[in-house]
Amino acid sequence: MCSYEDISKQSFELALNLAIKKLSGMKAEEICRNSGATRIDDDHVLIQYLNRLYQVTISTGDVLLKNKEEEVPIKDQILILHYLTKASGAPFTNKLITYGQIEGGKFYSPVFVQRNLDPILKCFGHRPELLLDVGQKFGAQRSTYGDASVAIDAFPMARIYFIIWKGDDEVPHGGNILFDGNIRHYLASEDVCVLTEILVWKFVNLAKEASST
Image (cartoon, rainbow, N blue to C red):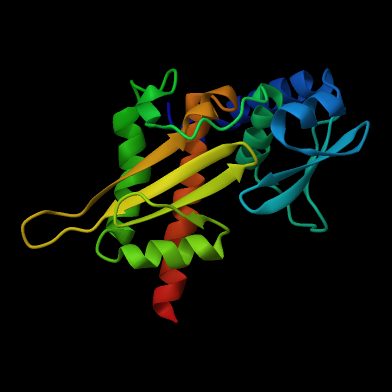
């Protein structure tokens, strides 16, 4: 499966509890060394996730937005804990891979394309410059691929690239979503798909807001 929406509430809670249990056996120094998180004290770390800071309590698995009182959705909690517990410290490779090249991703590549690439192409395919504007608002960096592309560090060591090729009268527009090759050391393929889907819809919604102003 490629979306947390496909699983039941009970499965959500099971996945969260398993991640909490795994995290509780780890040390703050180990977590920070491997994930790019920042240590607060022996039981708390700060992690950057989708351009926002979250405080994580190691012993309990509590995930809170720093200096905010809004509730963190369970799928975001799971992604954050999965990232922290799987992180290996592997550096960026600066070599791009497809979702299908991530272990377990090949079988679900068609689902990944439907849920992630298709909405990006529908929203930005005819106006690639808007991808650059939206990406900048979200903290992404312009990249050099295609006619328009951005790279965003969804987590400190998990980089995602959104790439658009502008079409013309003879060739339709196209694009791709790629990842730095180290992402397999930080997130499982299912988590990568869900993370990308969350980011895609944040981009699309920002584009809609920009178009309505």
